[in-house]
Length: 244
Image (tube, rainbow, N blue to C red; front, side, top):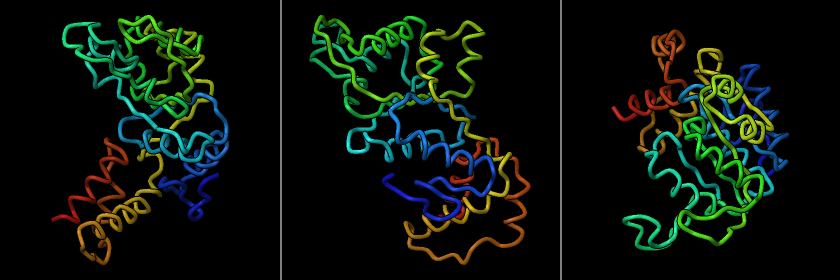
């Protein structure tokens, strides 16, 4: 692996003493060395993108690009061209050829966040591309080679989306060859102060400040808060505290 355990409780920027996190870190170390597709499941703000980044950096594809795309943030009418690219004149406004995220990630890793937001037609096209290892840009006839490792993320298990009729069974089987659950912060409360101290150190250096640490009332407040926004909310909370 490119990195070793930074200490007993962190790996690649992921910090935690909780038993779920220790199991997650060990699983990441194992799957990073493979080329299997990975499905990350977890609530908003739990750090799924950080997990994907860590897997990529410790994989055989580490020297190739890591390309990210949030399927929920791109309008449906633009999502196909964003993912597969398009040829000049493929549609109104397509004034030049443009490579999509799949092509940009060639030989590297593609991280698809909120993959369950893909429309059924795009699920079919993605499945066909993964199966054939080639695809065509929107409006094109030329076959483009597909050599990427796909890491996807969703807030619910893709198998549940299949049961609800919202996701293709064959695509879910392909993308979820290895599934990793990222626990919410409320289930790993012993990690709250570990993460808070780490974020405090990072932000203090960036803002050229030197706070001594968290007061006892601050620690109690952090430990008793539910953190609906998970790690992302904790990071933003500490960053604001340092800035102010």
